[in-house]
Length: 190
Image 1 (cartoon, rainbow, N blue to C red):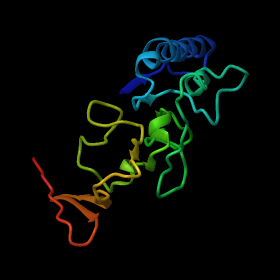
Image 2 (image 1 turned 120 degrees about the vertical axis):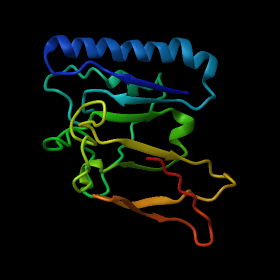
Image 3 (image 1 turned 45 degrees about the vertical axis):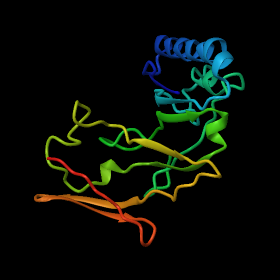
Image 4 (image 1 turned 90 degrees about the horizontal axis):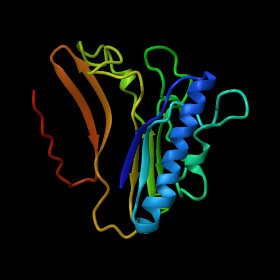
């Protein structure tokens, strides 16, 4: 089960209170509805939480802390940007200065976390318009966050990894690293 949310933005008192109410509602749902019937199943909460858990707004109110409390079972992990080593995900349009985007896995997923990362979509050299042109239907000012989970006894080999990508006037070029002797199939459309 994957639950996705986009909590209220901004640091004014009204927004903080609304974000806190949204976080408590999600926590209450998990604890009173979902977990009693599904506690053994894998689950995660993802999304733009509009607050940096490590660098919360000034003052004592930390609206999204109830999401990572013991009753919800959700765990906080920190994917990092492989280029800068930072955990910031906002904003590629200006200076990366906060982390708003999270994947909070439940207990059965958190014990099987294999790898996590923040994608560097902002590092693509001159993407063709309108791709990544702004915070619109075709682009975002947030960097994507991903996590890979594996069971210790999984029978399949690790997936290939895209190790680099560039865009030029004639197309898209990327490098794939995988296990020797394994076939990789790439599908593409215009």
